[in-house]
Image (cartoon, rainbow, N blue to C red; front, top):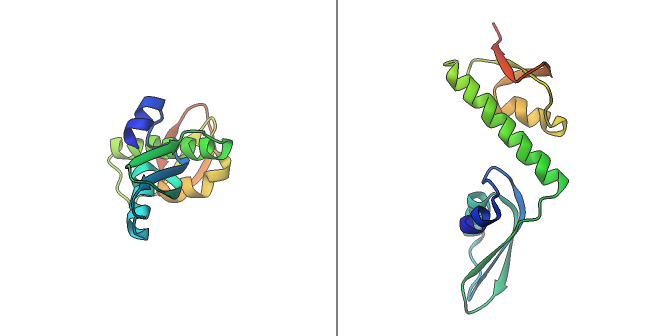
Amino acid sequence: GHAQRKKADIKLRQPLGLVTYQTSEKLSPELERILAEELNVKKVEYQKSSDLRIKLDTKITQELKEEGEAKEFMRNVQQMRKDEGLILSDKTKIKAPNWPKKFEKQILAGTASVEISEGPELGISKVS
């Protein structure tokens, strides 16, 4: 799965819709969950086969694209927090020229931030 992502030049932070695995026996729900997390896919399907194969659906829908942009945005904010020496309990405000509005709640929760507002470039400020 990772090799297929690399071949398609798709970063792991970019969620994908589906992975199909083929084996002689179906994996347990727990192993399917791990497979989904490891490959960052929304859905796991099984097909019975005597050969082990993995097929990753590399089609990126608009919603998956926006989710990937939100994850990249959060990663950038988290890096800024780290560079500023902030800890998890430190709340921040984010300024950015744009962001995936649909994922604003997740961005705020995932970055310990209280608001996002428009600004000329991505930046954070600690809330006193």
